[in-house]
Image 1 (tube, helix red, strand yellow):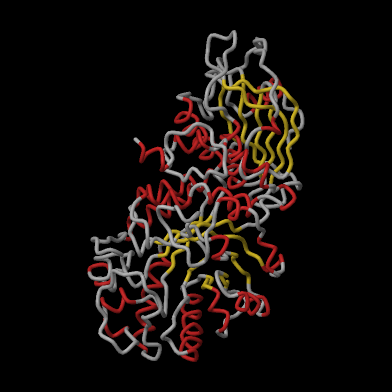
Image 2 (tube, rainbow, N blue to C red; image 1 turned 45 degrees about the vertical axis):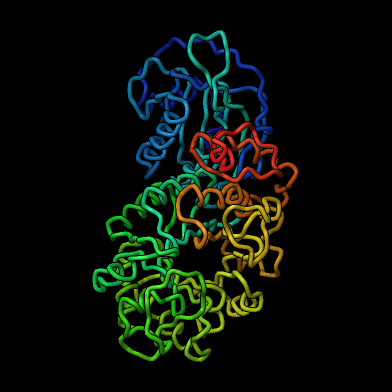
Length: 537
């Protein structure tokens, strides 16, 4: 841990690492107006912030350096430089040797501090001459630079200096996530979303330190991932979507592209193949899979609960083995989601038999199984994870079995619920979820012991949305609040204070061209990119 981080000490450190040429001349500091680090609208709110009421002068004479031979740290530095270039049109060198023009330094340091007690923990030290990000891992450093990105103002300050300067408030931030799992789910089965759409969503989520994207890849209306051993799944099952449009699917190369893009942002992709219900698209493609006694046909509606796999055929499990094998091979994360919800036409004993069999298949291919809360009624072991969305009784069963639980209560966390009666998209079967309702709750409120809570996930089902603008309308700004619910400590969360910080996200959302819902509960900074503003144009 670097305690003395004056410009001279950082320069000597950089020279020792071979980055900077020696120079005896140190230019005088630029006089910066006082700033208050504690008043910057950071989301999610850090664990602890200590302001020192000066500022770091970010300008063209700033350079980024990272610990040498520290896995992933150089890439984090390059990522930061790329984002600052996009935001400010300011080019900062990264780990460039012999920089005689450098006057201020951003140093991303691999620390061995025992105070950094999780892989995502970081410390951020800012003074007039240097910014130091301490982290034990590149993942922690990556979370730290998201905070730094939010600290950099959108516009430069007027100063006596001839160059543009962006003042970064000084002080110290110590930060660490409350939950290791902070997720969002995107349903690409009811309506298909392109690779570019998913990448944009990943970028927005990563900015707010969300680290899991769960992709719902199959349902009654569509099958969205190429399985080479069963090509009709996409040829037939991927041919339509809700409303009768042409649907679509990801080739395995496209899926790997999404996974790699997420990995670069320290985000885990979790694939979901929903079964034994929600399986009509698969059964249309291969009718031997069907177990509801009816001839399967392509489906473009929104009803649920009418489909099921035949749970007694060995060929069905051979099919599932192939699907899990192929998807697991191109998914580096530890999880495989098997759905398991709303399988209303599957008899209970058949459902239990099926989930027990599928759990073994998932484990055979080296993954931990996740299922919606219904899977807890089966004889699953404690390594399987329950995603609680509806039944508190099922959540209690999961806890009794020693299972971890992902908290996704539909009445609080479902992004496809309408904001109010005037919402343009969404449903309301679980209720209306305005921005305050989405924020004013806690994962610990529902009787699930803290040691059993893996984290929080906000699902976005796509029955009523068909493009990225409509996705953004339902997701934003609520997903921003869910990021804070899963990262920040309960004592650091307060609606009246949060809504002010949320209002200050408008410039970022505008710059990213996000068509968010401009909730009347928030006193937004002037915005031209909200969904309503676009419609008026």
